[in-house]
Image (cartoon, rainbow, N blue to C red):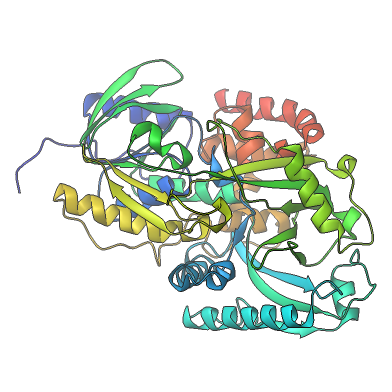
Length: 517
């Protein structure tokens, strides 16, 4: 193997991301503009790739033109699911991979961010007895997948049929008319999908990766890139042994040969009390479809996310997709079919839509396209990781790094991410006196978040949606938040409800000012 010039090996070995660390990384890269691996894209795939590579001992730069989880990775259903839908479609490999990766997240790498979510499919009159038998068989197959993926019943209990009385107790807003009972199953639910991305990026930073938000790739080849600091306009000509494109639905902008068919998934945000403060997620079959459902997913902040659609995007890819009114009407109508309350447009307090980066196979509806991921190499040598889904990000990242190592002739250690805990995954010390909500969101970092208040009780009061000023300060000092949007729309989800966002803006500005001071 030929010798190469020294690389910008790493910044400080800390998991903290902030404006100062970003500036130091850019300065170091200006002095030594060469790394082993450049990752373009700061969603779950890009952050997963950066962690995989950095934990193998490679020098890594992650460049994201906006913020971590700015794109698709913050618009999911917040589920880490076992892939029952894919099993029903005959994609056994995708279903097994989903179940296995769900087990990795829940059992080893991010148990503080993922927990078991009970889900009920109510058996009303429009669910025939044959359909009930088929769905029960599907849940049993899901249980078998869970066992084959070595996920114990302690993490995800087995599915079972439950009587109508218990079904109504778990989801009080369900219509009791003709209710025969329910199918109770369990899946994984993320506290927040954007928090998972931030945890991946911070863990990668702790292994020496340079995490550069507000830094776009202007030009890209298989071994070089022109990066532009979007805050200053300065550029860096970076040389890399391998370049990986992980920009999701925008992948074809950097590598024109990539063929995608983005699919839009829309959710609405509803007050939990409107649905009787359900203790379970409610699964509603879409009429006329065999393996499509609408979910009403309770959140820890007193809200319910109802979704999702699966519609082709017949327009240029926007920076931030909007939830169309027909999608919202479809979700409200489908969910209302099983409720005592008929949901109205004015009940919706927020809405969001995300775009799935599906590979274009040239046939079929977007709803029927495979969720398999692909790792592609362009004629210029750029490796693109695309497709897949949030649950299986780690497997896609491992495959992408392996491909990069092979192409560049690089030597590195084996993949470690199946057992590598993310920041916050360790045991929580001094649990006495810690707010349970902080432990649920930050894991072992909860004491550090609490310490941001520095004795100021006002910083522990909620500013909106149960989020405190201390959390906003922690996001600026340790989670790489650079502006109000980072704080309100990604480090927290306050921005999903416009009224909450307006109420929290002063606290966000104070947190940013305090960090500068």
